[in-house]
Amino acid sequence: MRPLYEIDAAILAAVDKETGEIIDAEALDALQMERERKLEGVALWIKDLKAEADAVKTEADRLTDRKKSLDKKIDSLKEWLLGALNGEKLKTPRCNVYQTHSQRLAVENEAELISFLQTLDNPEQFLRFKEPELKKDEIKKALKADFVIPGASLEETESVVIK
Image 1 (cartoon, rainbow, N blue to C red):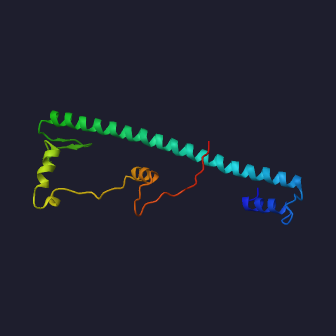
Image 2 (image 1 turned 90 degrees about the vertical axis):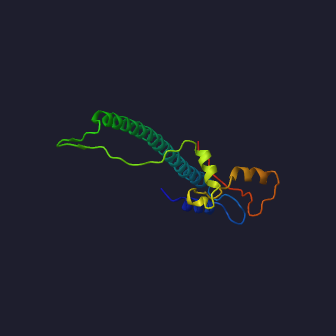
Image 3 (image 1 turned 120 degrees about the vertical axis):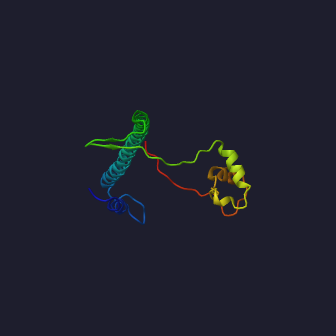
């Protein structure tokens, strides 16, 4: 099968450049059919890749849910084991289980804690401030309503829809 650019060149060659008359109608029809088959093949390939990408996403979501479920089961079994050991150690040829002690932060009311920390002289020591993000949909709506926003404009783009 010929590349698309060769088919397009052959279609142009089948038409007289000066008069626009068709030199060989049969050849032109065959070339246009070949071109259409080529384009259809690429469109079908895109559909196939999209279906595969969707299937991969579905499987990834399923595996993420499964991982969350397994993590919950692990945490539950660890809590049970901790209670059953009652501070003892368990050492066998296949596993070694012991209790460790560590500290973690417990926050009763996050909003109140943030408010308090913001009143300090150096709140950056305890708080992380994120950079502002653009609400692109809102900016787009404003531009469509003829609101002038320096540095922002609406651009026309092209895309392909394959069904």
